[in-house]
Image (tube, rainbow, N blue to C red):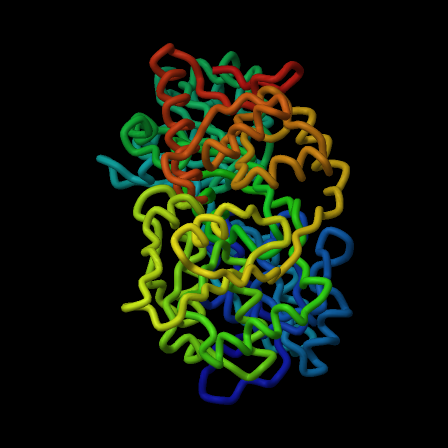
Length: 526
């Protein structure tokens, strides 16, 4: 705060200058996230830090700093009126500070403020590039190239030199450091878009900056790192070596699915992009489901078989409509066709009694299902809530085992609206590196609403039936999971990506994403 005191109660309105970190939204501090959750007004560069708005309330007033003065009369007035204003700043607000004038404006207006440190690029980008900030020699120097006229003062150090805002003058900086006595063999790393999935690092030496940067396409924000610490990158690089690093992965889905899949893909370094291909809607006539739920409560069924997470969701919503909860399943046996369905049941408070031990499908479930035995089973009826387009395989198999089935439409699946034009163009033009198909319907619907993926795009499918459908549409299947689960499919794609990377390195090539191999794609030089 401007007074530096903590002995009085903070006024309701104030301005918080919050360090947004170097680019990775996960590096926002806990204090920063807490302030964003309480903010009435957020001032930020929306293009750079718009993702951090997820920490805010829905009714927050957003001011784009790129379109008007950052802390303007408007925001100062808001703070004086009792509103909490958060100004998001790049990196750390006080590290090569660009907000001094804004802080002064708050002080002049007698508006209370605080400054929340952020993770500075000077350390974070090096860490994400696998370069230790200080190794062997305990010296670490950070300079802003725009403020340096004479590089001789920075050429004599033996530690690590980190240079901000120097990419456009990198060749001249290298020559100046050599002229001032730094050996031309000194290792150099230039890393752009650090800590994001667009991060790209060129490793060179002071004497070879010009030829090695010639086709690299480096732009700000970027850091130049000079020193022997760069030599440890081969051993310590962990971020850019992730198996799907920078891969743009299309995830066709229903509107209610794939949150866990997206997080898993991000953990592999991918940039997942979800496109709804199926919309889940209530059945046109709800009476059938109403009768089924009443029968479930009154003891009409011995078993309930769930073939999808959407079926669980549909039954759960009906339960809530009737004021019921998971206790209504007491005395019933519950079957789940696979892991995702089982997770949805557990979240509902129901532990499945039966799941396939092998193939997670209707056939796999039937292989485990016990035949009806009048001595053991007081009731021979099974409730099967399902989609309107579900197959009859399970019903036929249960009937052969002596069970009677109430095959009830719990929800409808309809084709979603086409995605925006840029997404459609990326799908057909090879802008995506991979697409994950988790069912035959996602293949049919994606092609129907957006067209066929480009032939450079890696096609990953969840099982043989989905593979068959993809091939019927003329798609080359590159990856198929060993188990029919979305998690296993993501892991299989990651393994594929790792093998592609290893093969490129073994051949002495720079690993490239599939989208970078299409005609006309920008290629970065080694």
